[in-house]
Length: 434
Ligand SMILES: Cc1ncc(COP(=O)(O)O)c(C=O)c1O
Image (cartoon, rainbow, N blue to C red; front, side, top):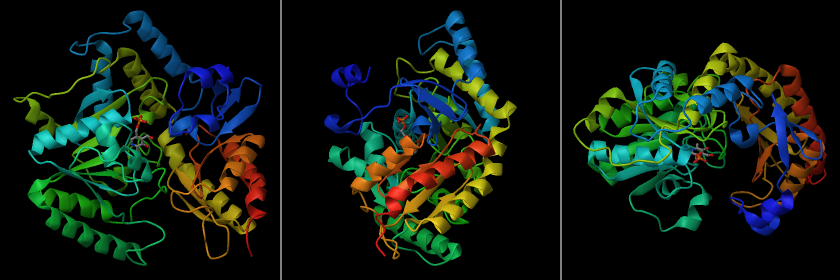
């Protein structure tokens, strides 16, 4: 299986001579298993996306029923499932964020948002943050601030990157209030220099994902909402990773009670049971396309089977109270990260919001990372392998380890996962200098 997959398909983001795919054959809840019978606790929800957990019958059965009823209809069709999906999503998004454009994933949701923002405002420039990932298609790649963008440069023009309010390594201030105030002043200066009437939108990952699990400092989202509104700049929240309960709220921007102009989503929208993304527009914004052409489309736009997965997935989140569960388990995650930091010299610390966490590793007491910015340290691969040996699947990048289990995980499995991380950390502790 592995040999044929490697021989006949390219793996993403990888040198092909170094890919080591797991032969995944099944799963249930927070666990999945491989062809050789190994059971792994999934601390990354596969691609930060199997939010309701593996093998969820309610989603699978809904997709099967949809296949029997209507597997596909042309993008211009009205379908029962499209009607239900729009209505249900409108009920979980706050305010007047109730018009959706359906795509196949997060990249094309952001791609659509770039177009919609430009057409709606008549402006061209787009701001986004350096510590961000927004997708792999042409526009979404230029929107992306992190080094995954570099290989595609020069890309389409008009994308401007700004610093983040909450990086580690440099600082806008010691307190959250200072960081918020100074970063907002910095952002306003960038807007002034670029020309407020030239800027269509500011895109943010509401809580930054792979680039640090960085929640913005208190007051920042409210400040950004006010600033963008004042300059007629649309605020786009990319909730592809942090949406659908991951942070303990349905959407991460709800932590500060703001309403963005556009929200993009994917991953947890269907828990990856089918490819689907969406761009949610505020009603007033969507109405601007009443009398002008919404000039984009996809053959698989509003695909019935994907929409059936989305509806069933949202219903599972609701029925099982999984959003509240993510919030309730946050203290457990924090406690376990603190426990690891106390027991392991190679653990510098970490952060958690809901079931969305990151552990920072260090190779000496001054906090030096293994590798550092955009540098792969060979020991980090050893850690990934050690975690697999311990029966834990997790995402390791630069000098960090992410913790994003399915939201259905129970406290015992969550603590068990951290115990396995602790055992695997022996490989990093052995390399700690000091
Ligand atoms: C925040 C964010 N935006 C966009 C994307 C792109 O989504 P997709 O891979 O579904 O195209 C991702 C994927 O990881 C993401 O994490």
